[in-house]
Length: 341
Image 1: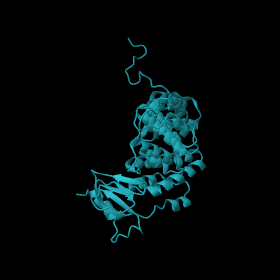
Image 2 (image 1 turned 90 degrees about the horizontal axis):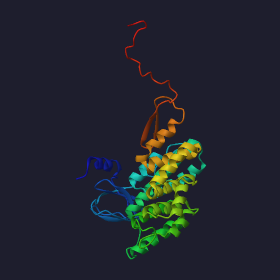
Image 3 (image 1 turned 135 degrees about the horizontal axis):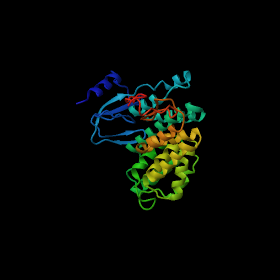
Image 4 (image 1 turned 135 degrees about the vertical axis):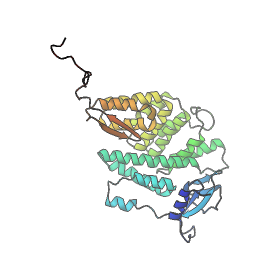
C-alpha cells in the first residue's frame, strides 16, 4: 500500500494521459518513494530498470508507478534575473527527483559560477557545487553502468578509465560506482584496486573531477602511502576547486583523521581568513564529532559580541564576549557592614 506522502506526490505529478517515451521523459518511483529518471518506461513492480546512466537494481523496493517527468526547473531563467540567487534548493530538488541529466548540467554551471564569484558569495557557490557533486557521486554508487561480461578486476579498470576521460560532472557517477567496486585495505596491491601510481597521477590532473576521484578512491582503499597522503592533506585546503578540496578532505579523513584534524585546526588559528573558512568546513563536513573544540577555540580568540550564534553546516555554536567584565563571585551574598562586630 502506498504511503500518504507517496499519494500526495502522485497527485501532484501524475498526468491524465502519459505520452510516448520517445516524446517525454519518465521518472520511476519505487514503493518507498525513491525517484529517478529512466531510459525506458518500466512496468509497475519492476525490480530493475535502465536509466540513461546505468542499470538501477532494486530487489526489495520495486517500482510503484511511472510518472511523466516535470518540466525542467526554472533556475536558468530565475538566475538571469537574480544572479545571486541561492541554488541549494534547486540542487536538493533535482537530487530528490533523481533528475540526473539536469543535475549534471547544474553542476557544470555551478563550477563556472563559483569560479567567477567573490567573497562570501564564492563560499555560497562552493557549498552548492560540493552538494551537487556529492549528490551525483552518491547516485553513481547506486547505478551499474558496467557490462556483466567484465570480470571484477576489469570492472574497476573500466570505471577508472571512464572517470579519467570524461571532463564534465558525469564523471562523478563513475567515481561513485568505483567507490562500491574497490576493496578497502589493500593499498593498491591485489585485486580490485587502483595503484598508487595511478592515484598520484589523478591527483595531479587538471581535470578536477578526475583529481577528486583519485582522492576519494585513495581514502576508500585506505592507501597508506605517506607521499600520497601528504598531497591529499595539502590539497584539502590549497586546491582551487571546491570539489577537489572536498574530495581530498573526504579521503584524508579516512586515511589520517588525527593528522587532518590537527592540520585544519592549526589553519583555523594561524592562517588567513579564506583558508580558515575552508578548514572550518572540512572539520564540520568530514570530522563533525571532532569539530567543536577547534571551532570554539578559534572563535574565542577573536572579539565577539556576547551571545552571538554562529552556524556552520549542521552545527550551531554560541560565543560569549571574552572582553566582558568578569562576574563578581561574591555578588548576591550577604556582606558584613562596616563597623559591625
